[in-house]
Length: 405
Ligand code: AHE
Ligand code: ZN
Image 1 (cartoon, rainbow, N blue to C red):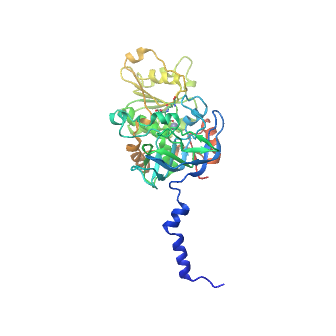
Image 2: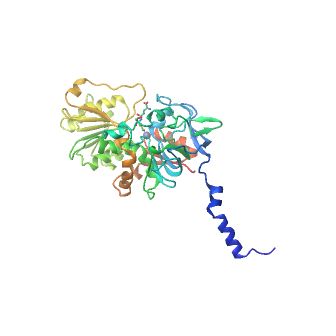
Image 3: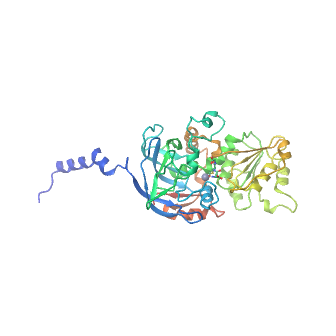
C-alpha cells in the first residue's frame, strides 16, 4: 500500500481539529450529560455512587463540571434525617468549585470555561433582601431551593428512571450539576479549586461572621466555642481585626494546637475546670467581666447559652453560627438581654457571594486567609462515605473530595 503523503496527513489532522468535528463529537452543550454522583437514596444510609443523567441548563441556569467538593456537617445533618427540610432521594453537597460547562438562555454573569464557586446563599441583587443593604440573605429562590428543585419547580437530575432532588441550590456531590445563575460566582482561574471549594461554606461562614457580622475593634476579647472549620475561621477573622484575647473553648484537647496555629491566645477545655467553676465563670474571670464577642460554632443550644452569658454586661454580643438540631430551642434569663448582652446570628458569614467571593479568593491568593491548612483528609468520589466518617472524628477539619477520580 502506498504511504499517505505528508500533506494528506496534514489535511486529515486539520479536519479532525476543525470546530465542526469538535462540536459534533465532543460538545455536551444542550445535551443531557451522563456522569457519576453520590446519591442519598434515604435518610441515615451511606451514599451510593451512581450513574446519573444531568439535563442541560434552562434559562438563567448554569451547568458546572464540579472539580472538588468539601463535605460539611450540614450535609451529614440532612443525611441523618433530622433536617426538617431534608428530602430524598437527593444529591447532597454545597461546598463546591468547578468549571462552567454550559449556560442557559439569558445568563450573562458567567460564561463557559469560567472557574466558579457554588453559592448556597445566592445573590440576585433584585429582591427586597438583596436591595436592603442589611443582609446577605437572598429571597429570590429560597422557597424552591428548600424544596430541592430548580427555580422552575423541576429537577435536572435523574437516576434509574427516578427524579433526584437538588440540595441547598448546589448538589456538588455530582460530577456535573445545574445551579441558578445567581448561585454561582466566577473567581480567579489561577486559584486552585481544591482550596476555593472550601470558601463555599465553612471558612467563609466563620471568617465572615468575625469580619462582617461582629464589629470587632482592636483589643476586643473574643470567645470562640468549638474549634472545627468554622471556629478556626472565626479565629483568623479575629486575628485580622487585631482582637485582644482570642479564647477558644473546646472539649477536645487535641484542638488546642489547632487553635494556637490559627492565632488563638488561650484554650480552655470546659470539662476540665475546677469543681464548681462553669465556663461562664471562667471566661468572665479571664476577661475582667466577660467577652466583647462570643461565637457559637457548635450548634449545641446549651453551648449557645453559655456563649451569650459569657458576654460582657452592657455590650457583649454573641453570634450564633452553628446549626442546631431540629426542634431545639435556645433559652436564657431575659435579664441577660436587659443588661445589654446581644444575641444574633448569621448565615454564610453575612457574605454576599457574587459581590464578595472574588475578593476572598484574592485574599487567599495573597496569603491573607489560610485555606490549605484546613484540609486534613482527601478522598476520591468513590470513597465519599469515608469523608463523612472522617468528619465525625476529632482529627478532621475538612475532607476534600476529588470528583474526577
Ligand atoms: N434546613 C435547616 C436549616 C439549616 C441552616 O441553618 N442552614 C444554614 C447553612 S448551614 C451551612 O453548612 C443557613 O445558611 N441557613 C439559612 C437558610 O436560609 O437556610 C433547617 O433547620 O430547616
Ligand atoms: Zn456547610
